[in-house]
Image 1 (tube, rainbow, N blue to C red):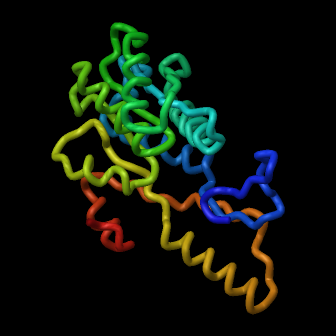
Image 2 (cartoon, rainbow, N blue to C red):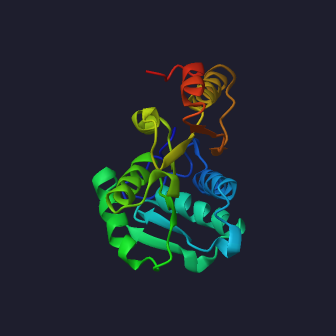
Length: 222
């Protein structure tokens, strides 16, 4: 199985089927670390992160989603962002409107000194909607850092000259495809069964500065 596990008739993961997929928690950590790094580049951490808050759009019904946002939050906390500067807001749907609604419901809960916002979520769309909600509520792009996961859903947004959507963690589909084909070849020709779990956490941060070059290299630029 690749990307998503097979489930049995009871909805349980079929652990005996070899699985190659994204290491959700670890990728989330890299997302959170990237957001913290950019925030520090903008000196948002000065004064004990005064005026800087994170809004995390969650979708805990999906195990992958929960692991990604948990990893992201852990990295933000390790970078020094105080726990009471992190707001969680649940999405009803995994799309841009769903994340807009979630972020809109969180914005009124921010303290009065909130000036800079970090927007997180399990994929590009959960962050895109959050960023759009901040824009419609008066936050300028320079005061927002949104970093998604997937990359390909962020292309149109990154083509914009200015946006609170800073970038996305792009997985390595070429490596996943290569490893999958190699495992299958060895299994069929040599009888070598693949590992039960191969975790893929190789991601690249794409931003306005490099997204066209990176996507072109792996044949995803359009």
